[in-house]
Amino acid sequence: MKKTYENVDFEPVTFEPVTTESGTPNIRILLVDAHTLFLAGLCCLMRDEPGLTVVGQAVNAAEAIACARTRPDVIIIDLVLGSENSLDFLSDLIEAGEGARVLVVTGVSDPQCHLRAVQLGAMGVVLKTESPGCLFKAIRKVHSGEMWLNRSMMASAMAEAFRATAAAKRPDPESAKIANLSSRERQVIVMLSQGLKNKEIANRLFISEKTVGHHLSSIFSKLDVKDRLELLVYAYRHNLAKITPAPAANLPDQRLAS
Image (cartoon, rainbow, N blue to C red; front, side, top):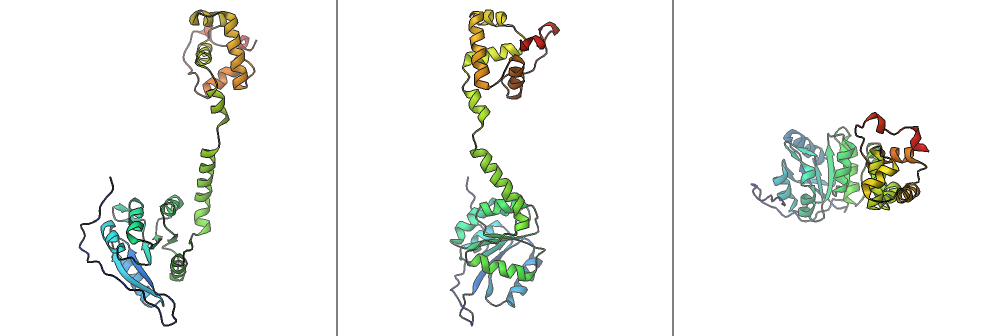
């Protein structure tokens, strides 16, 4: 169920576009962080930075959503807001901002969280250990529509994501082989794993030994195995059969390969 963020003591304000003395656009910024001291510090820094204007502050999800509806240019947000995780409402924040660019500025150094933020729509990630100059540059890049990602910070997570995507798209050859087995052939594999000989399998299935032999030949061909022992190893590895205790006389031995 989609969360709502209406109950907040905040009066929306509409900010008209402004330009600096040089004629460049003034970037209107919304700050979202649970630490008021950090917010105050950012406000002081940006007060002296040409072209950057703080137009709102929020300390939680409800305030952030309400402030975003004033449509700032860039929203700077931490990943952790007290007991809240901004990843949980980042999509709602971007929707409320109607085109506002989101820049994550955080002390959380987990690349997987950074990647998740980008997947949800954030345009960049800056660690709180970076310099003010780095932050200002990131703000301007993100405002212009570019991504801001620290390569060393994101490389491993991005590589892992690409590997996972490739693995998901790549067909599993063993699954395709197993899918070709008939229900009768699966029964034969299970009985073979129980230590039964051809004659015993035939009696259990009410078929001839010759038919059991045909089934085994077909199984060997479909699974690309050479003999019964190799088939048993394959069956256990791919959950076609389970290893269960059996009397010593019934355990598979070297005669299975014959």
